[in-house]
Structure formats: structure tokens, C-alpha cells
Image 1 (tube, rainbow, N blue to C red):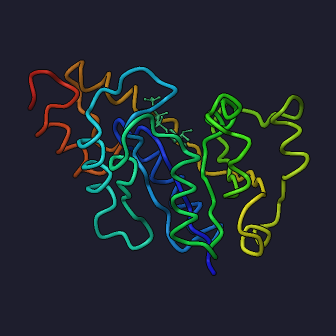
Image 2: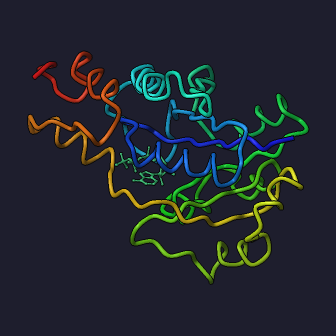
Length: 215
Ligand code: ATP
């Protein structure tokens, strides 16, 4: 069965860096779908700026009408910190036969060893790491060892096994960040062309990054 991609993030807000990465993974790794899963209560970060329901709404708007993407609200339906291992375990229960590919930017992968029960993730899913500008894959330390043991260059391995492999995949580098977008909006500048228009419009309609609302 065709693997599912799983792409989590605070998505505060979602932007073309996220969407292009998810789309290239969808196509290059031949995923059935990529689930975009906003993190309701991020364990590793301070507060989010937009509330979880608003971040979810922006993800829904970003992928509306796109067959390859699923806007997945499962972390909003749980209470407590949103741990990725819990999300993957839920998906494994729903899709027992399918390979799952957890998509991470290289920056997120480099912080993996701080995640809750991180060493159980490969028991449930593959990890697919997107190259991001300025970040290098580790070749030493616990993550270097993990890559040495589980790494594969072959996309077929992600289809033939349902979990347990690490695949590093180069994606088009779009140096866009949610922080930059929030700062632009707060400074009264227009974030247009960094994200789908529907997301930009929602930012203005909701006023989620500018206390004054619409500009
Ligand atoms: P912030 O600026 O608030 O830290 P962000 O833009 O880095 O946010 P997140 O929601 O924290 O976005 O990221 C979710 C996932 O997307 C992470 O795995 C991260 O590595 C990846 N990611 C973020 N920005 C990009 C980008 N421009 N290109 C590719 N991957 C990205």
C-alpha cells in the first residue's frame, strides 16, 4: 500500500516553504497523501501566536481543493502536550498496513533527541528529512548513529517496509519562515506571495498577527 506522509508543525502561519516541501515529498516519494497536522500544544516551544483553531483554519484554506493533502486536526482533538509519537501511534492504529513517513525539516531533525519518546518513532514510522538551507546532516552523535543504522537512499525501501528507515531528501530551498511572516504583518507590511492568498486573507480577516486586525 502506498505510504502516507505526515507533516506536523506549529504552522503559525503555514507558508510556501511548508507547502512546497510537502508537495515535493508527495511527488518524489510517491506518497498517497500528506497529512498536514498543526501542533495544538507544542511541547518544545513557548506560546504560539495564533490559537490552534486559527492555525488549523489556515492549513485548511491552504490545501482546499488539493487532492494530495489532508488538513488533519487530530492534535486539536487531544488534550495535553501534542507529542508526535502519540500522533504516529494513532495513525498506525488507523492504517495498520501502510508505511508512514514523518516529514521533518533538517532543523527539526537535529532537535529530535529532545523529543518525548523519540527513540520509539522509528518503531512506528519512517523519518524523511528535508534539506533546509544552512543545515547539515549529522554524521556523529546519536543522530549520526541513527542515520548510519537506518539511513537509506532508496525510495523503494520506504514503500517495502512500513517503518524504521531514515531518508534524507533535498527539496527546493525556500527561505521563508513563519517568524518572518508574523514580523512583516506586525510591522504593517504585506506577506503576499509567501503563502496562498487565502491564508494571507485569513490573517487579515482574523487579525491574528496584528492586534488592530485588517490593514
Ligand atoms: P517559526 O518561524 O515560527 O519557527 P517555521 O517557519 O520554522 O516557524 P514550523 O511550523 O515551526 O515553521 O515548521 C514545521 C516544519 O516545517 C518543521 O519540520 C520545519 O523544519 C519545516 N519548515 C519550516 N520552514 C520551512 C521551509 N522554508 N522550507 C522547508 N521546511 C520548512
